[in-house]
Image (cartoon, rainbow, N blue to C red; front, side, top):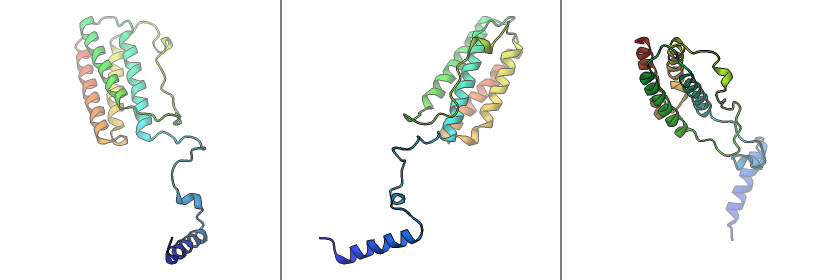
Length: 163
């Protein structure tokens, strides 16, 4: 049996909460199972954008690049495929979560005409700067991965400059 003092204390607490404008549903905070799914966290949105950008960069390398040594490009492509794999390993989207910006997949229209060495070089520069731009928007371990990929992209620029 519940002691009388406990019941009185609970009733007093509920009346104070009611006077403060709280509803009983506020006492049980948590997601509303019947409501819309919560939006994705900022770091998840950034990660999705970086996965899309890395996918676009891979598509650029897979296109016909003239005036380049195939061995070098194959090596750079392999590194970008590793980057993409590492980025995707970090992506965890809860089932039913809202996805405000779906990750676009590269399409043939993204790359039209022959690709020159200047295009991947410029893309590497944009990629490295973008990864650095988002370092403060992600958890420290993911920021470390972003910084590592940015450093790799900077070395790719140097390698492409040598062609």
